[in-house]
Amino acid sequence: MRSKLAVLCVVLSVGCGKDEVVGDDTGCGVDQRCAEDVGNVGDTRQDMGGANNVTPDMGRDTASPDLGDEPDVSKPSGCNRVPRAANGPRKVIVALPFTDTQYEVFDLDGAGELTRPNVTFAMGAGHEGEIQFTPDGEVGYSVQEGGTIGVFRINGSGQPEVLTAQLDPGFYVSGALIDAAGDNLYAWETGFRKLDDGTANGAMYRLPLACATGVPAPAVELFRGKLIRAAAWRADGQLAVAAVDLLDDTTPNDVHVVDIDGPTRVASQSAFPDDDAIAAGFALTNDGNYILVGDNSAFSGIPNRVGVVGIQGEMLFAQQELMIADPVRILTSPFDNAAIVLSTTDDNIYVLDYNPGAAVSAFAIRGPLVTTAPILLPLGAAMIQRGDLQGMVIVGENVGVRRLRFEVGGNVADLGLLELGGGIESITGAVGVQP
Image 1 (cartoon, rainbow, N blue to C red):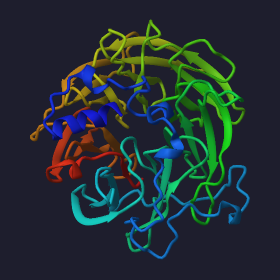
Image 2: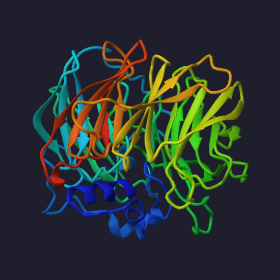
Image 3: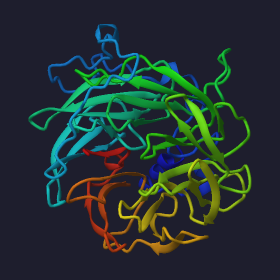
Image 4: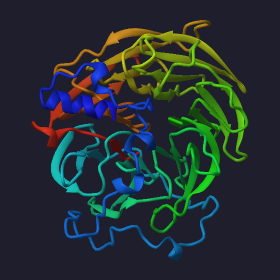
């Protein structure tokens, strides 16, 4: 919420300072919006099935399907999805949450050039986060306004088809992450630890995905926690989570590792020496040795920062803090030599040096990314992990889409900004790229 209000302030030329931007923020961070931010969830979910539904007619029912007709997927389904080719053209999906069409499809060719064929489709408004894809690149999932999930597919002709415009899983979806096999979507609600009497709602859920359609089945609650804000997969299949507390421990911490099969809490650690952080950006290094978590609290009086937490076996340890304003998104190089931090209120993308062999301080701030076109309110980002374009990052900015590239030698190159136009209809939100 905070970052999108900042975007509107810039586009509409309103003089919003940092404190004004977050005046009604309940402290739920940028990457995940708390259910408390929107009051009564039931009143905020739009009916996409009426006369005002602008979703193109693509031969499918865009309302939430009758999940009772799907196969039994109450357990991980083992769909055996074949990963798409590592090289070749990809589709980039960018949410334009202040338009009627709401999502636009861009073409990224095998050489990394981005073009705009003016293909759009409508679901709900995807203000923030990364659009998730199944490993075959066919089905995409976007967390949307009102806590719904928009589900679409890219068909054999490369065209988008909406499968369900605003799926309501029975809880307010603050964020989501797909597993490596593409069998399950893991989604969380950011709130205080869920209670049986319904007075709090913080929990993590698993939504098995139907093999035939990719549409999520009813959610299974996995564990409860306080202010779950982000998650990322480790190479061993364990889940790193940013939360105040979860599972069997109510001691305030910032970072946790969970064995999802239990689920059991493997380790927990505070990234910061105080309890005032509001977690925002979150990432693991490719080598699995560090977790980076951003703090973008506007209430603590402490400068914003990025905490670095080391991993040794099943132990976590706080290593260092880097002072960076509003670190809403963090991405680490697949070559284990750099990272970038998107700072929305600072209108910057900061580059970090990463030295995996350092005994004490593995990360250092290199400085702002050098670009030809000015950076304005970067928020959404997605990175290609495979093939010739490994390390390419697509960044959604205020009214444009930027390409960056992590390079083998440690450099981070700006490959240019594709401007989308002026006005609020060109403001970007969630971003995704086919794997």
